[in-house]
Length: 56
Image 1 (cartoon, rainbow, N blue to C red):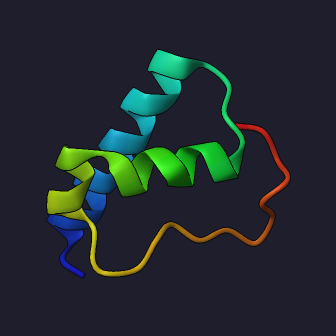
Image 2 (cartoon, rainbow, N blue to C red; image 1 turned 90 degrees about the vertical axis):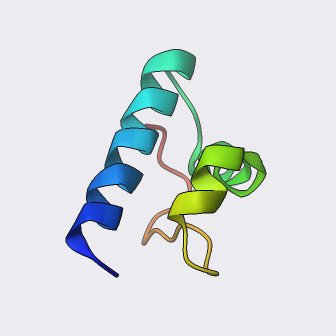
Image 3 (cartoon, rainbow, N blue to C red; image 1 turned 180 degrees about the vertical axis):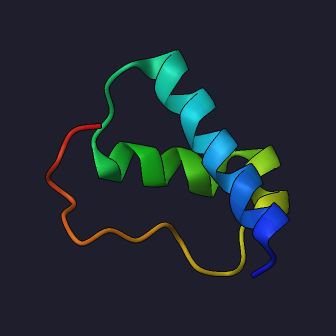
């Protein structure tokens, strides 16, 4: 994955977290899968995390 693509993914995550304030990893991943802008950014894999129970 290119550095620019990774950067844009981080920006997408920051924007979502600012808009919704508090999300579980599962909620964030669901938004990632449903979002049209994220569809342009992501590879075929969903977001991953070592701990999915943490709240952002």
